[in-house]
Image 1 (cartoon, rainbow, N blue to C red):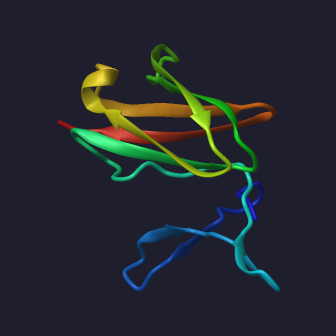
Image 2 (tube, helix red, strand yellow; image 1 turned 90 degrees about the vertical axis):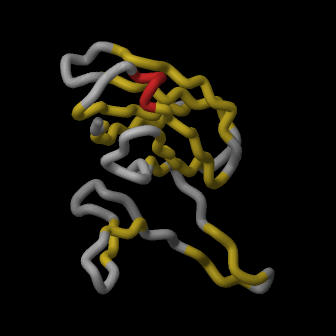
Length: 120
């Protein structure tokens, strides 16, 4: 399940976007299927702090790079990723910017980019 053709997302009763997660039931119980996925930061927009979450199919080093709209690198986070869910806290004070910021996750052969909005 990915967003190659259409967005891999669901909506609750208030039309708030929710991420999708696939679980598999085996004779060992319920197991999470872990693939490479970069999620939308929460909250978005934000004014002090936000969290970027992502999943990795295996433990590996990952790089989260923050860019402004001109492509200028604002901050690079080097992360020792674990298999499954990972999170990185982003502070507004670390980015020295406002408005639209792009964040790109690189891990081995995987790359994904999303955008966030910083407000005053």
